[in-house]
Length: 504
Image 1 (cartoon, rainbow, N blue to C red):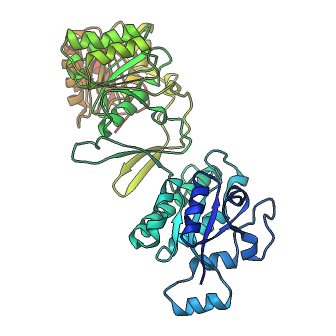
Image 2 (image 1 turned 135 degrees about the vertical axis):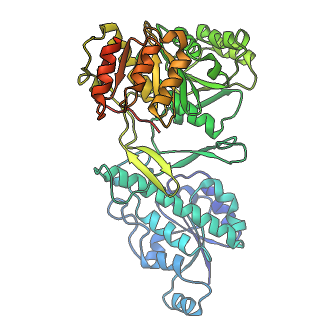
Image 3 (image 1 turned 90 degrees about the vertical axis):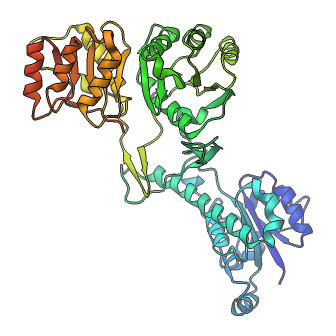
């Protein structure tokens, strides 16, 4: 039987050269529409309608390749004598190579960019990989000749084809669905880069992103220094999630996916300086993230931390950076990674906040818009907090949301910056102790913020020992009355937010 290759692609990159190579290898080329027009001047090509016996592009292109002849030519088993005889009797062409990529649904989501014939051919070819080579990526065209005689490579290309279809169909399902949590879903992800390693040097890792995401990670641009590890990616993401909550200049230093310093300022310099000073010990080896362009003044904060405090910074990630700032940072530490991620969008493109577990994924709403809870805050003590304290509580509530739970933080008495952060503890009192001890003398007159309720009054009494002036907590414990009573006895103003702010 004659050997055929079916070429039908939207992306024409490299298709003419591939057609020439396949022709030299003895394949007869079948093609469709725009692909045929691309190659017919240089390669002998058979229009697909000569194979199908059907008219050309029908119904404005909706029907081109789907036919008994084409799908049979791809699917019949070349090792089965009965199949071979049947193919000969039915005059079915032996299509040994299928080259196909799909309408660009990712670029133009809509009914008319949902490819039907392409996925049908790809699926058939991938199923019959023992006999057929399937190519969905122009980068793989150079493997075509090798794959003809290499079943393992054909299997690898078939797996890539099935992943490609799943990625494509996952986008379409998400486009149509208005359900918050569909019964079955495929979350489309594309590899963007291989990482230096995962969480540890012995773990390989790669970053994948959703199509058309507006996540700042999709615009992450390398400027200088170290390539990213999985830990670095996680820290940058945590930093972006922290500072995106604030409209004015905000900065944070991240260690192990959790902030060790968060602050606001009149400009990027002041915000970053405060974030570093919040906990300069923990800031060593950290990731610095700000929500405004890094200028020379804010870059000098990094220089001061390096030369005066002997503190190294692993990665800096910012929306943008001036040339003067970049040149200064390059001189501070050769291995310090410098990255930009563009402006943080006000609205997310993703439907869900995803958390992965081995064998499963939690889908949930993003914990955005904390301002919605501010109106429901309730003063529960005799002593009322001052208006300035309420404003600092609002900053603190957004800050504590970014800290791994159980979390308790201490906010400065005068300015929007953290002075102590107790994160990731299994007891509320444990988190409180860490935050207060870290704050030290800055706890006096400061504000204590908890991401949930106090189960006992021990945290309130400990806060009093450090002369905390006001407390914000969720409320809702069976022992709320004990905590309120303790606060009244100790002269502390306390507010219930009525909203938990766990982050795990």
